[in-house]
Image 1 (cartoon, protein in one colour):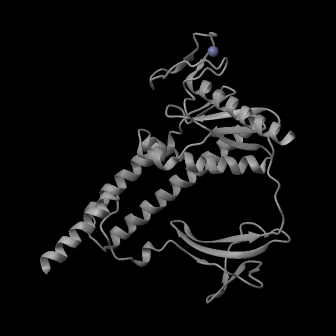
Image 2: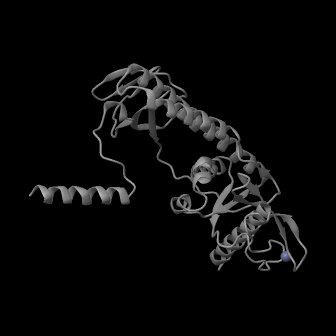
Image 3: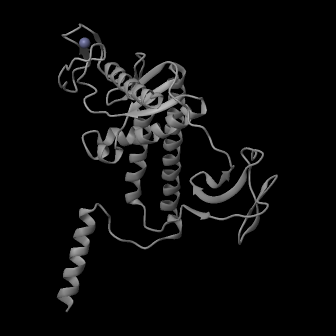
Amino acid sequence: MLQQVLRTLDRAWDDMKSRNFGFPRFKKYYRMKSFVFPQLKGEIIKANQVKLPQLGWVKFYRSRPIPDGFVVKQARVVTRASGYFVMLSLQLDVDIPSIPFHGHPIGVDIGVESFLATSEGTLIARPKFFKSLQRKLGLLQRRLRNKKLGSNNRKKLNTRIARLHQKISDTRGDFHFKTAHKICDQGDSIFVEDIDFGTWAKGMFCKHTLDAGFGQFFTILSYVAWKRGKFFGKVNKDGTSQTCPNCDAHTGQKTLDVRIHFCPECGYTTNRDVAASQVIRNRGVNAVGQTVLENAC
Ligand SMILES: [Zn+2]
C-alpha cells in the first residue's frame, strides 16, 4: 500500500518536473499580488477616495481624473514593492474606428545584436542598463542564502530584491515607450514580424529575448501607434533575412555573424537588420495592398 502511494507521488513529481513546475508549496500571504472587485456599481470615486466593497471609502492618490462619460467597471488592488495601487477599468459605450493603412510605410525588425532596426536605416541599441541591474539582482539573490529563513534580515533583503525587480520592470517599460514613439516619428504605417514569443523564448534567443521583453514591446508599440493615429500590422517573419529588399532576389541563409546584406543580383548593400526590416515593410505593403484591392472589387 505504502509502496503504491510512493510510486504515485513519484510519478506526479516527475510529471511536474517535466512540465517545468517547481516543488509544490503552501501559499503565504506575501505571495498574494492582487485581487479584483469585478463588479462595481454606483458612485465609486470621490476627490481622493475610492469606494471598495467590504472596505468602504479608502483614501488614495488619484494619478489622473476620470474622463467625462466613463463608468468605473472594475477595480484591481495590486501590491508592488513600491506600495499598494488600485487600477480602475473604465467603460465608455462607443465604437473606436481602427486606423487604416495610409501614408509612409515602415518596417521594424527586432534583433539579437541591436534591439531593433527600422527600414529607414535606424538601429536602436540594446539598452545597457539591463545588464548592470541584472548583475546587482544576482548579487542580492546570492546573499539570500546566508539569511535565516523567516528572519528579519531575510525579509529586508527580500524587500530590496522586490524593489530592484520593480525598477528593472519600470526602466524597461520606459525604454519601450520611448522607442515606440521614435518609431512612430518615422512613418504612418508600421509593420512588424509576427512572432510566437512563447516558442521563441525557448529557442536560441532565450535569455536575450526575455531580457528585452519583445512581446511587451510589441504590445506597447501597437498601443502608441493607435494613440498617434498610425496603422500597425504584423507580417509573416519567415526568411526575412534571406531576401533582397531591393529586387526580391533570394540571397540565401546568412549566419548570425554576417552583419551586412549584399545582393549579388542588384548590388544593394546595407546593414543586415535594416535589410530585414525593409523586407518586412515590403511584405506589409503587399499584403495590405491586396486587401484594399479586394475591398474595392
Ligand atoms: Zn537585390
